[in-house]
Image 1 (cartoon, rainbow, N blue to C red):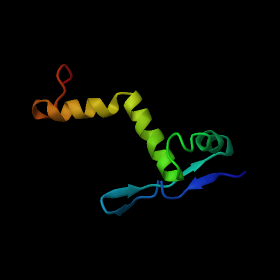
Image 2 (cartoon, one colour; image 1 turned 30 degrees about the horizontal axis):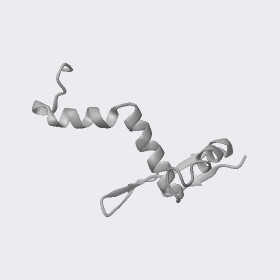
Image 3 (cartoon, rainbow, N blue to C red; image 1 turned 90 degrees about the horizontal axis):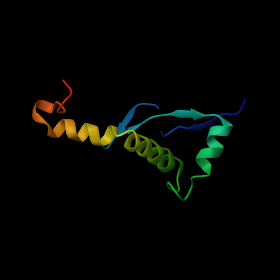
Image 4 (cartoon, rainbow, N blue to C red; image 1 turned 120 degrees about the vertical axis):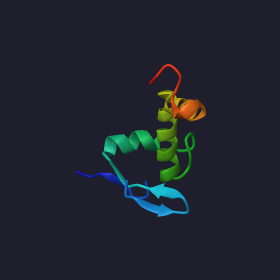
Length: 80
């Protein structure tokens, strides 16, 4: 079974305040990701990074995190 490995995007190494991780995709997953080339970026790492960020935004995890940080004592209003 062939798996596409994006070696710069689940193996923890720090470089200039950036985190590198290595992930493995099945051929079908990679085909879907490859179809986003140009739309989500040109390089493999750019595409995967932008997919993750889009997913986080869609789930409101980014805005929720920011709101929590802006709230008093880091607690989002209404959730304790």
